[in-house]
Image (cartoon, rainbow, N blue to C red):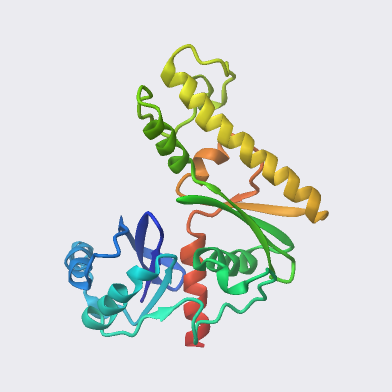
Length: 264
């Protein structure tokens, strides 16, 4: 089985993949100071709860946007799984597509892995919207070339900045305003602080996404398939028509594809 590890700015996701089936998935807060031994205590217990032993892992692949966290992940793979971790984007795990931007080396591993998975699954021109610490919009042409994209603050990051900067504003959950849940109509005039914040944060974010996707469609000038991924993709898909597909496991699928290429 493949142990796929996606190191993001907020969380590290560990997934055990057999073929294309995800047998288990676990996440822990990203902390570059966390040692290989600390990861192992946590992860090996979780594997044990599912009746799995470390020797079921025959490949380890890592995608990271936090370089300082990589060393301890590599030690985890070698010390506890007796495998050398493959690093997405480094030989022998080349991306396998052309990166048509000013500085190709600046492309984040998460966005590159999403490109691999999206082009393998869907034909034609694509836009991948990934809801993470940042919300990214990535443009991929019909040949699989990465053409560039957009980086916007993630909605949780935006909300945190708002609450931290305004002493009297409360913390609220990321959810659709109450009058809109279930697809019903409702007012966009908040009658109290919490409702006003829900409306501003949620519908403001929907408006931003719809506006950017509309501009991307005009600039690309051809039919475009828009794919959403990340933890909040399902929530926003229920309240906008801009997404053609929701693929919550796109990054893990991309890591599995890259590992398959190496194995072949």
